[in-house]
Image (cartoon, rainbow, N blue to C red; front, side, top):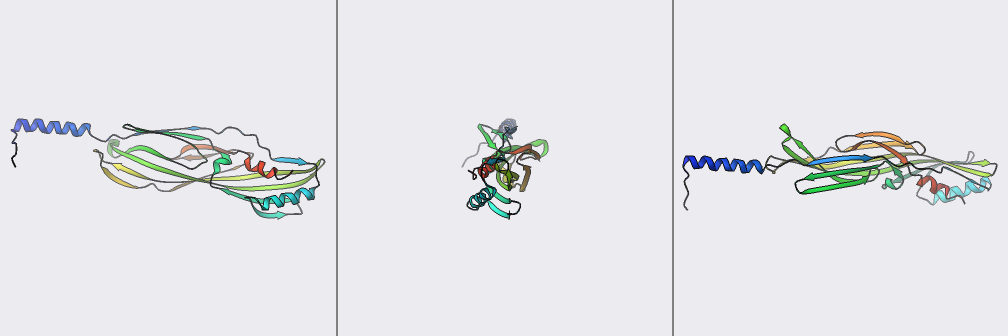
Length: 240
């Protein structure tokens, strides 16, 4: 095997070119952004009047609720009050907390994520670490949401027959997990690990939207949640 020996002057030029090549080959951090779209307003129907005796309406309510996805917690026959609960892992069907639009861009890769804040989602984020932010960081975030509901249903006598009223209290929970990778200045993996798990909750009454602060590096900030009126309407539909 033969070697080419460079004279000192040529060797200096060669090392300079290698240095320039390494400089332009450095890994560059990506960019992320997000914006929040507030939820639309909803008109809720929370009571229904029927021209039927109280006892008949009460019996019908108990019958349908016992066969539904609601769990009856208490029955107060004397006061005609039913306390029921509800759980869902698809909260976006029943409550609205607005939408989030996220973007991720790095090199030739671009991604856009648009999702209901009340729904589960996954997305990438870009950031940087180290002195002067020279180490690119890419995170993959997973959000899993769930909804707990407490329903109070009351049947009362009315001049036209019987009035049924429904009030509800909801708690939306978002559990956030994920992983990250830190690259060195040349694009090689420097560090990797899991994002510390985080849990966010927002409680609100069906007839009173509530704004909750979910501000962090992974969430969109303050969100306002409200009922879509789906569960309330479902209960009232049991009364014909």
